[in-house]
Length: 338
Image (cartoon, rainbow, N blue to C red; front, top):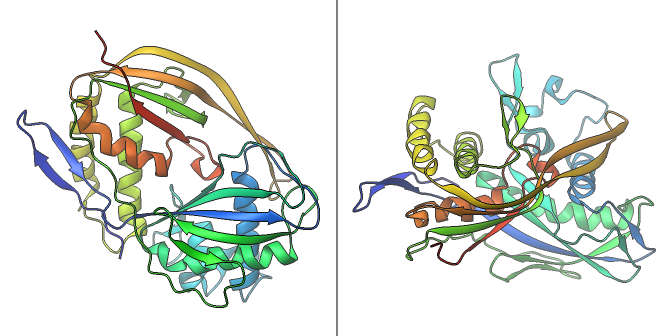
């Protein structure tokens, strides 16, 4: 389960692009209801939701909770918490390197920081590659944690009302004693239309860097390069096999596509510096993440060749700290540019 198909296809203009994501991205909508009191929560809910999930996942799956460093635990190779939440790559028998991209994202487009008692909050969970096998752990953590632990500033209790997949099929509904569901991956869309104008709206701060400086204009080729990098990392670390045989092959494919993307120009930019603030329990302090937010319009020939990358990027997010909800964007086909 879970492979990315990199099929190099030549079109009439001999341009190269990849057809990918056959069984790789799974998207779910979770709906919870505040039951005992109002939920006071950060406007950017990814940090709170992710922290809640991590706490409950460790609580419900870890048999050796007294071990503070999971890398030293003899069970880590088969541990659900370690493999999902910590996401370390084992380089050899002793050394670990933290993976660059987690196998899931949790985020919400609801920007309220106050959810009244008896009101609902909807958030999304994207799961990548083989980790779809752990879907029921995601669901159980929000069922059990909502009843016993709570979320937000005052640990408000909640009920998980339902979970739907990308196509609207009910995966779980409150009161269900059994879940019978066959995961269905997202079919990433392509475009058969000729496109020369695309507008991208960055909903949360985007951190793309060059020479260790945040890019303030977000060039089109930087977006495409980042998406391709995430595709490669998912394929290598979160799927059965990596269809890109080596880093050299990945670099060759990426450079070919990115070089074409360099021809795409910015014709209108309305970006400003945005900030996300989160509190880290591990570091016991506030953390600040600055990035660009707003809208950019791009113009170039044959932009339909990049459509599939941009469509996939809506579920992967772009830039740094995507696990905290950063790099969330939408895009639309604009009016022809004269």
